[in-house]
Amino acid sequence: MSTDDLSRSSTEGHRLLRSSLEIGDVEAARKGNNYANVSANGKSGWKKNLKQSPPWARKRCIWIGLVVAAVLILGSLMFLQKSNIVEQIRMTPEQDHDIPAPPSPSTLPEMDGSEKPVDFKSPPPPPPPPQPPTVPEVDKFEKPVDFKIIGLIFFGRPPVVAILDCYLKKNLVTNGGFLDEVHFVVNTDKKDDITYLDKLIATQKLYKKIDIPELGYNSVWEHSVEPEHMYIKIDDDMVFFDDNAIANIVYTKLNHSDSFDVVANLVNSPETGWLHYHFGAVHSYLPETVPPPEDTDPAALGPKAWRASALPTWNESGEMSFPVTMDKPDNGDVLNANRPEAPPFKGHRWLPLPEPRQPKIYKTPISHSEYNPYGPDWKSWALAAQVHYSLLENIEKDQLHLYHYGSSSPSSSEGVWDMAFGRMNINFMAIWGKDVLDNLPFDGPDDEHELSVGIPTKLGRPVLVNTHAVAAHFSFRTQHELYDTDLLARYRAYANEMVCTKDNQIPIPEDG
Image 1 (cartoon, rainbow, N blue to C red):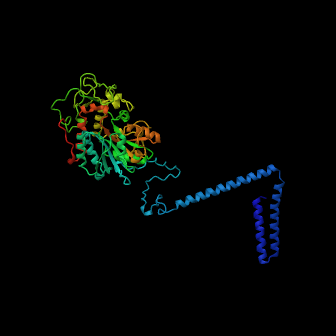
Image 2 (cartoon, one colour):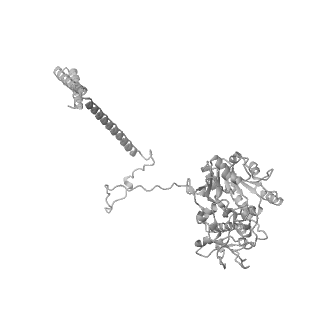
Image 3 (spheres, one colour):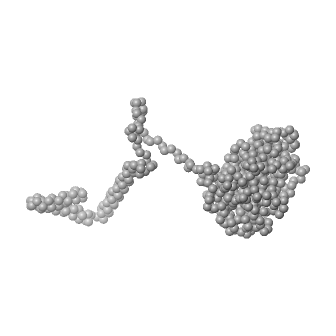
């Protein structure tokens, strides 16, 4: 007899004994008592036999008991889990909005007998693939209100500041932009330039002039920032930045608080130029070598010309190429006009090569591009001219996406390129005032090195580039020959048509 049988027999015997005594049936009580005794003796005998068994048998019984207990516990857990699932399915839509209520009979479609019967044996269809998260468009960024965002301009070159002025005013908070104020730091001792700045400050109440006790970047930073504000440092020769450039670098700075500063995706920069070339944002151009005829279409030449589509195709005699020099000193000297790599004439244009253009790009200056902060992209005015003309073409064709690269975090609206503690131009960047002040004075006069390499490396906080924030830097001191192209006039024409208000048109100088 099994243990369970013995247990049931003993229980039945005791029940019969209790009920018989309650009704006075002595004979039945005697039978119930005997039945209980037999069952109890059976149980006692089983225990006695187990104790008299050899050790290996007792161990086997113990292991069997443990296995049975484990199976019973597992079965109980599975039963509880199944009960919980059933209970969730029974929840009403008011309790769980993720579970739709079943349709009422009145909402079910009528059947006409032509429908295929449901195949209950077929497996359910696979779930749809996961969709990327829905993210807001860049132009829907809302301006942060917990701190001020201040444009910081190191002033010194009025001809290009005249273009920059339109972009700054468009991005003021009073015009729906991010800039609460714009501070012009006087980094020049030229009286005419300072007079120009005073007149410019008077045109906008959110413009402020910052005088410093001495020239030099240590002095500029020390006397122009406060710890609680975020600063958008913008060089005075930025000639274009897209509508969302400031919003992009601000949000990348907020999203990546570990970064030291965030820089825009600069056109005409040795660090980004090579990338633009290899990602297809630079196109095939060469300079014209003889002046165009006087009856040239005004859309192709003149104070209102900026569209690449109006340019004639390059059709010069001789070899399709233009030399690039690397032996030019970096002190700002201009190339001798007799050198083959010098500008062909003042005010010249760069023209698109005949189709197919892309295979011919290897004959143009950009083919010398290097990922090198001191390479051809920094020294060569010719490379700079080609990337500027390419940008104007991309603007006209609405294809600034050609500049977008880098990992995206948290969404595809943010392309991030980590400079990995390599040098980066800081012509257009977002940085907290506190991060600057906590690291003054700089170890040397080169604030770009300090803010992109020295301090970030020391703190272990990288410099990031937001590649969706496209901004054009006109020239370095090694590229002064750019002023012999018509590029400045083209950027002025674009700004007057697309950025400046009717009341803030940029005057056209007498020389065009």
